[in-house]
Image (cartoon, rainbow, N blue to C red; front, side, top):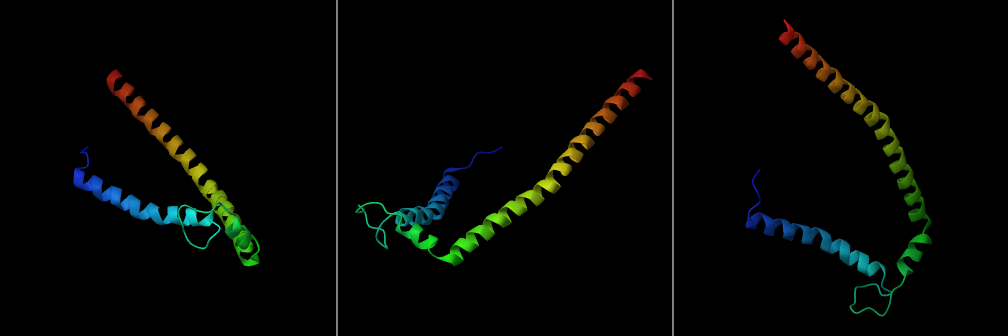
Length: 108
């Protein structure tokens, strides 16, 4: 396996910064009392979170999203666990078949 060269590392560093920077700015603004990012801030506030809690559409959307996430996780488990068990069993059966074939071949 080859390692990344310096150009690839620079590209990936810039890519990560470009992807993470807006999230960081939104998180910083979420806890400021102003509607914009000002550094240094005058303090921290939960003003925007209270505003969301007072909006019934957002609260309803939150609960719907939470329910859909739980439902999709449950459905994924319903398919993934049996599939993993089948793959494990199939792998075990294949391993045993190869071992038995090897023993029979050497004994004959």
